[in-house]
Image (cartoon, rainbow, N blue to C red; front, side, top):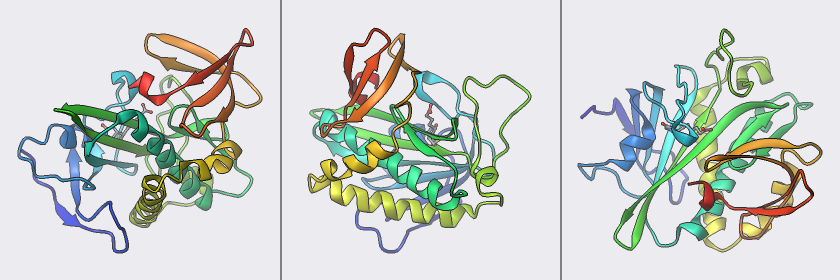
Length: 257
Ligand code: BTN
């Protein structure tokens, strides 16, 4: 077992990040929390890595995790109902979006691309991977977030999607630890609202920043690539979208996990 370099907390949070385990280098922060054989971590704990040797993306793709980016995962134990929990992941993406927008030049368009990506002027800047394991009736859920901050974006090979980092958007290097603590405070406050049943209050903001309202975009769902135009988020955390034949679809994150 690799040991964390340090453990710290972020003052002012209610639920998350009471214990933040910081590793200089790790295989994958999601894997570390999912396969916690020594039961070291408890709900709300966060694993943070400066770099990952085997970062995982959606559909088991490799998530390039070089030094300079932000890579962390949050643990939620004893989740009773995954379907009702998933909309919270959309709020995590909104928190990432807001934090990026705060630090970007004002003319940049920072959007939420279904299911949980953040795009800046059409280029991917962040992705989220939710993974879960059944523990009897309950689930152990890990939300893993990767954000391009100061890490170099490979240009020498074809990326599936064009990517960008926040340093380029803001025109200066990003202070990773202050970005991280601000983001955790926001995610923590969104979590507070979420467990009070306030997800619908976020709909105007979610719908304001939706990606692909005016043009069709592609995303992978199971073994299909769907081409849709986004219409709106619903109070259940679904995305209403229109396919290229004009049929309305209701997309849910649960179908993708
Ligand atoms: C995607 O495919 O867009 C999701 C990428 C998620 C990457 C993050 S980085 C922190 C956490 N640890 C991982 O191995 N993956 C997630």
